[in-house]
Image (cartoon, rainbow, N blue to C red; front, side, top):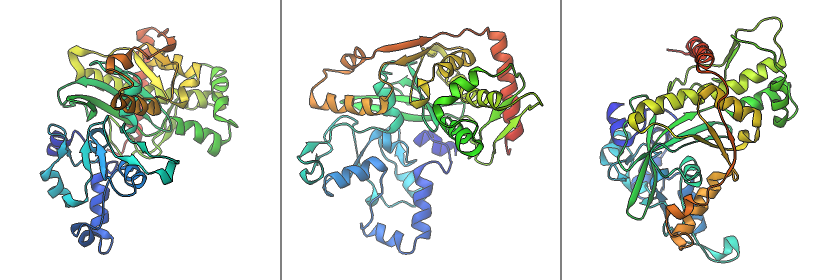
Length: 376
């Protein structure tokens, strides 16, 4: 694992592409022979879309998506021969690695009614960070969808996390490459879906804000939503979920609040690890996006439990926005990333209102709760 982390920035986990690809080649009859004959292509979703849109003329990806395969060398930004040998992956399968803003071919007219150039390509979270104008070291964003992904710009040098976070290419535009440190939370909005679909305590996701706001003080109640294990910084795929500290006077409202709190505590897990990795650079205010951040109560709670100012932009669909910005750069619609940064607009700022002692006491309880559900 230390060697894999040094080369690729990733930890050995079933989450990434290389282990899945190795399994397919080893277990699907004839797959390895076909791959070695050049009959099979491998890629992440972006490369599949590009291949289909160009009617098979272009098999390419960008540096951000490539950095999630566990096969890319972060320093050279090319496929790494050592990793290909380790996982038994034929180089012939792989897409060409290109900049995030550039020429990825022409989408054929039969798909979209006319030929359209493909000019911007980025991974989900890197695109969101680009849309949030996280262009300076210390700029950090957190996206709250089904899961949660926090990413902090670490500058022009390849970062090495000492706290079990991931290193990644943030974007490559022209001759400039920015790197980032990233942490993944497997369950964020999914815990709200669970309350709706499995427990039936709410009828729609939008109801949870009002329900959580009615909760009585319930110190000692923690919901650890490790439905599919724990992501960063624990990386424990065998951990399982639990609600701890229940008493007779607690009910749906208190569990709903504990569910939202769990997303905030997991965010602090990531931010604390990022802060230790960044050292002198420190972290700027937390820029948030994704479906959950429409909830004002959640955003304020996030500020209170992390101790960081939380900034919600006017445009919260920042993944699509980031991809559009990259395409605009390649098309000449924007002059540079400073031009893009000037277009970021704040919709609302949430300042921490909880004192540090109370915040840390609650977080200590969270850490103990996590220790109860871990498999190691």
